[in-house]
Length: 279
Image (cartoon, rainbow, N blue to C red; front, side):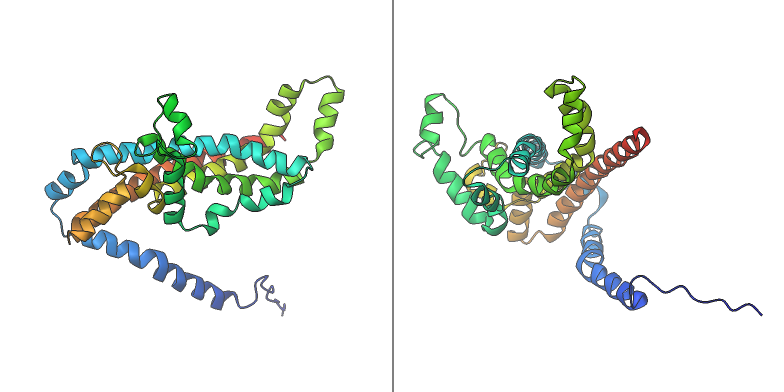
């Protein structure tokens, strides 16, 4: 008779922790989402389609997704630069700069919106100089991009920092010793290592921007067909006690956002597989 020993679980109390995780996930995510779809199902298809394709809402879609995409791209570019400087260089005030990166996490979004509005109005410290160049930030779509860039930058920086810290500078030195120029080293050695995590930071910043509300309502001016965002229209529907219409907008936003994030994650997976194959 052969005695079969049970393999010990790496995670103690796996069954208990799995049950707790599923319960927590259900209470926080699955049940609210089910309620969202259930409330939307009370609408007829014609009314649902009319609600989610309203001209005012379509303009809000364009602004929300367009500004979120632009802000995520800006954060990807500048976040890489900031993370590189913080990891590779030592200079006075570095710790202070590193701490300031987390300011959007700690600052209430409404406070951030008020501060950005005060800075970028035509009479603000920054806005008065931009006004001389006929650049309008506050109460314009550009102001939405500025606000979303502000709240999304930490996601890219904090995602890239650990990877940059683990990236051995000797690899770059070896490339330089073989005669590679710095731009070739960056393009062929550094960026391939960072590309998967850059996509992760981009996805986090993009997802955060899509759901932002507090920092935008002040600086955008909330002008119909011009500077309204989708979360604002949902709040307006709720204030008018049109709960089914509000959930319909939320469902449409959820489906579009999920599709875009799925594409980004597939690109990240493909990039990781390709990078592993090259290695």
